[in-house]
Amino acid sequence: MSRSRIIVAAVSAVAAMVVAPAAASAKPIITISGSTSVAPLTAKLIPAFLKSAVGKNKATFKLYQGGSDIGVADVSAGRVTIGEASRDLKSSDAGGIVWNKIARDAVCIAVNKGNGVSTLSTAQVQDIFSGTVRNWSGVTGSGKTTSINLYVRTAASGTQDAFQKLFMGSATVSSSAAQKASNGLIQNSIKTDPNGIGYVSFDFLGGIKGLSYQGVPCTLTNAKSGAYSAVRNFWMITRGAPTGVTASFIRWVQNDKAAQKIVAAGWVPLV
Image 1 (cartoon, helix red, strand yellow):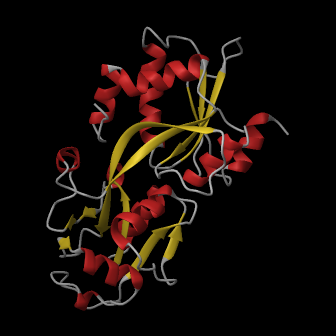
Image 2 (tube, rainbow, N blue to C red):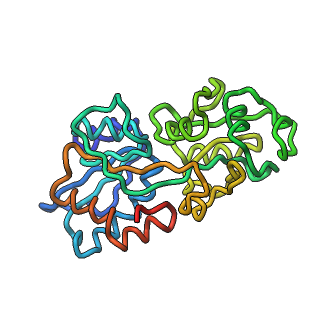
Image 3 (cartoon, rainbow, N blue to C red):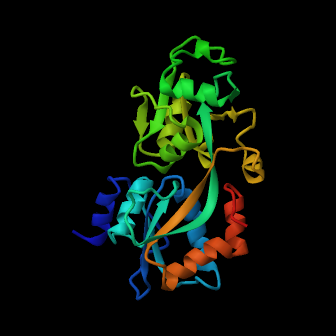
């Protein structure tokens, strides 16, 4: 089995997205797997890095998805160069890996555009996602009297981990919720289901309706200012301290003005 086939298997058969041509050369191949929230940002950063003075023609990148836990497991086992996570370190994570913070991201509660609800409190989010409130008639402003359809991420997801910490606290997500393996699948489910509700990374609000949380709209401006509280970290994880082109890439992402401009267009930059 080839190296790429091994990696594809490790990311649960999610299709690989190759960024930058894989022409035969002596250039190192940097493989990346993990978070479906971090991947869209990385896909924008890679070509900019390869055009920069520090990164020009220095490497070939291959970008895979599959969820934060997949990224952590892949890099821990040496299957990829960089694992990506949209959740913080867990006590169960393997030792010997280094967490490099690259950005922050808003997690938004979202509904179908036909739903009249505009804002939810913490108590309302917990009541809805725990299954205590199962009909839209129990949600102020929805204008609906139909059953609520819940869409959540799988256990391997960093967005699921962030949602639990940021919104649910000790409350448990209902077992009736439909689990989806990516932000895009949650987005599409809500877009096509008038009764649906879920949560996504800010970058995936296209075609659906992001709700205010605790009276504050889920906008990039509010996430950057700190007014919107449901914000989590993005990480690039390496097996030991990064070296060579991998180290150059991560430092460029964290510090270069061009990289930070890319981050600021849809996420919360570190500086």
